[in-house]
Image (cartoon, rainbow, N blue to C red; front, side):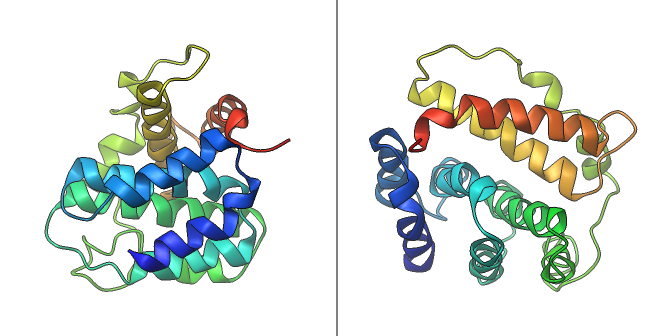
Length: 192
């Protein structure tokens, strides 16, 4: 994924050595060849994305749109989460490109075409926090790689919930509050 690697390298100057190691790991071990490898590949997008500019977020979304759906939702989910990061950032800044990015959130469910977000079935359960129940709120410090990956998984799920509009159980305000906790815990990966 040369374009994704280039996107990561654009922002590497903002990262501490600890953050740079996350990017290096993603480039060395990440791929679209399986669920775990794809999660590793997109960890830097989840780390960097919330701090990216609107133009960088849109660029990330364009890169993600070029990734085909292979029929494996486990591989697609980290791609969807990166699109969710871009969509949230663009929406929060009232950037009109958010409308375009939103059309790709359910790319797989819409027959590999742009379309409205699909919030039925399994996604309805996710929006109500079915996966959030597996995450704890407290994290240990210093953050080890497994704890970092776990936190990124939580942030990934929160971004997806937010981008699909939230729910009565997980309204966007609650999601924003949890994302702020994640951002605070990830500060050590960025230069001051």
